[in-house]
Amino acid sequence: MTRNTDADTATLRAVLEAAQARDFTRAGMLANQALATGLEHPLLLNVAATVLEHAGKFNDAIVLLERAVAIAPADIGARNALALVLQRVDRPADALIHLDEILKLDPNLSFVHVSKGNALMSLGSLGRAKLCHMHALTLEPENVIAQAALASIASHFGLHEEAADWAHRALAKVPNLPDATIVLATAELAAGRATNAEKLARRLQLDPRLSTADQARAFGIIADACDASGRYTDAFNAYTLCNAALQAVHRTLASGTSVLDYARGINVALRHANPRCWQPQSQHVSPSADEPTDHVFLLGFPRSGTTLLEVVLDGHQDVVSLEEHELLIDSVVHFFNEPLRFQDLEQADEATLAPLRTAYWDHVKAADVRFAGKVFIDKHPLNTLKLPLIARLFPRAKILFAYRDPRDVVLSCYRRRFKMNKAMYELLTLPGAAALYDTVMECAERMRPLGGLAWHDVRYEDLLLDLPGATQAICGFLNLQWQPQMVDFGLRATAREHATPSTAQLSGGLKHSSQGHWRHYASALQPIERTLAHWVQRLGYPP
Image (cartoon, rainbow, N blue to C red; front, side):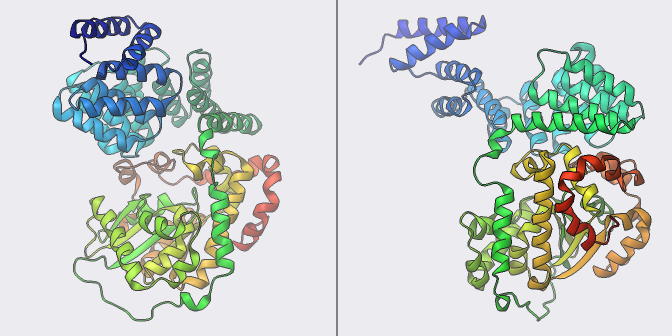
């Protein structure tokens, strides 16, 4: 059927005028009517997707926007809209693809550099994100979103004066901007002004426009302020409110098999493991010139000191590290997807394992890590659950296993705000955090004798007591000569590409106040006391 070009043009004009007037109800109605008649245009698809997005139907919006991009690859509006929705459904890597395509079309769009910076922040690449936001400011010096993002990045690295400066710039233009206010409150906390921090967070909560996620962050600041003031009951109540809000925001992570059930499945398999399949290879093979001299997995449980260890070891001239990258993803897909193929892993031959080993090193190279002739450290605490894969793929690897008083670990996991995924979702309740800790530690305990890997335990409290002595022992295990600069880690912590909840703390050096902090919350921890009691005794901590 031949279309009436003039009528179609009038329809597009009417949709555009309604959208520009922010009358999305009318714009969406006109767009959907036109689409139903067979008129396919990126503007119509974009507007219809906007209506779906406002209704919370993000995946349906993505389908329309992907069609818009397919029929008009150079349409910047459609690509940008698609990238923004992909960000909203926690697909920042996919969003980056479209943002980079837009910047090829026009590299001078400040708002796209901001979006790219935000996507990189979601991926944890804070160094690259900072460059994007700084470039956005060269194009648009008063871009508030870029200023707020730079405040947040500086705050993550513990650069609180710099963070506060960026936050003040943003707040001068948009008072009570959540990101900037949270950063400013965090800076007040770092300066020891807990009362000021709490006031800022409570004032932010009065804003009716505040999202549930921002409410959670405000509760987190209030909780930290109460903790710093010694009001531990108030602090625990605020942490609970913070985590309840985060559960609401990320409730989709509760669907499907939980990480806790997944981890328990691994332990069931380990209880029935065939020891003959796990005999370590005795032959020693000298590494070639393009390989690492040693391969080390830095494991444990979150908040057990793994970030401190990595930053310290990264100060050695013969060490390179990579933190919390999913380098074992190919072997996970092959053996550890549901249903678990544990017996296949036990019986896997070299023809099966070799490509997975190659895929691991390809991921390391893709992260631009130059490991030839160095000790390579793969730091990912919850790779403890992947110890069976590590043992079969890398039988000559070494394990650095960080541990800490279980009560401090679980409390710290409950108090800190992590980048959310299915594992971190378990930490939003004390029973969930304690159960996951128990299950992960059981996995380590069962794999220690079974896998035959070289193993060195690192007690967090020993690092606090004698960092040089503890690191000298680690260097002995890794056949490294100890170097004094290893213990001067503060500046290195602030210069990293990625940040964890520990990074800002490490920028200020070791803090002994974290040791035994659980005692302030002893009554709140009583419901999980039985779950942790075995590990308190097993690891040698006083009751």
